[in-house]
Length: 63
Image 1 (cartoon, rainbow, N blue to C red):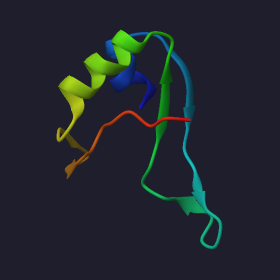
Image 2 (spheres, one colour):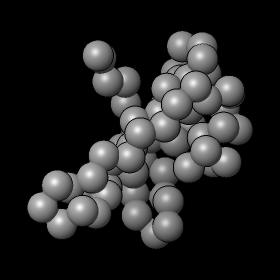
Image 3 (tube, rainbow, N blue to C red):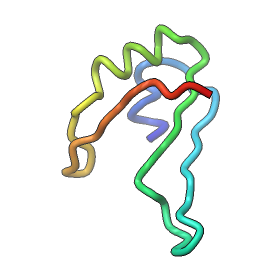
Image 4 (spheres, one colour):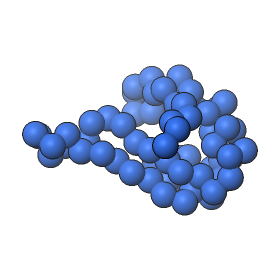
């Protein structure tokens, strides 16, 4: 993910939350960019893109 989404700007942090019961990724990632413009660019380019054969949803999540 860092390589793919890093193409849109410097990434400050990536979080991959786990399902507590199964100890597996929930299929969600939170990517924090250093600049809001980079996040908006990633959304514009990656929303509904294919990643490993799956269509992904990319959006802003407020803290």
